[in-house]
Image 1 (cartoon, rainbow, N blue to C red):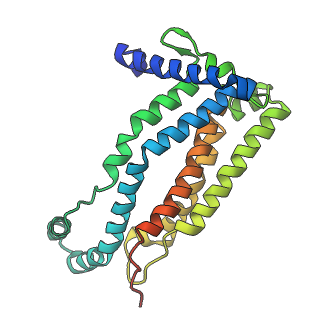
Image 2: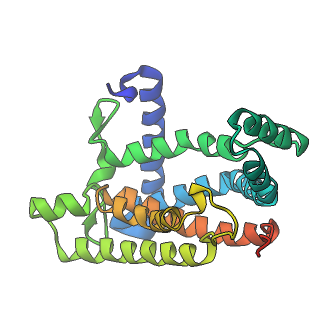
Length: 252
């Protein structure tokens, strides 16, 4: 079932489409054939700027979780044979600290509609019953509506396609590596929970590269959106980590 066949959602998507096409038209004297790509970048920057409060909320929640981590580990050690008591004591701890285990999750959900609309604009061939002209635009000769995988297997890949996608993937991989090195959680001595196991830590580390993997399957416009997003996210996390530092784990 297509959710955007529902009239209100179709109207919303069409309005977003019209705004992006209008912005592309305004940018055409400056960017020429790449005006739509520049419009995607500007819209992504605007969305990320509007979501700065979301990032702050997430940083605060992460700081709170790191501060409570030693107390939670002690509760797990003390009540590991009594799950009901553990749950009760854990909830009591969160109430005492005036927070919840779900702090930081609602802001993530708040941005889902925005991300969903932007992404849908990049993957649909038609919007509200008319052709999606955005997908006919290109970036330095690479069509915004074509994915690297479809271009490769469809035999339509050009040097421009490889060059543009290659540059974006290199940026995403570099950002993933920096993020992994800077924000990778260190194993905590004395914590035998599954989340602290070497296997789980390796899984968390590998997840940083999923965006680059996903980018080869989506249209170039979406890959461009993902690239701007991961760069913004890294810079924002670095700034907010300095503003809201995590508690230093006690070792030994």
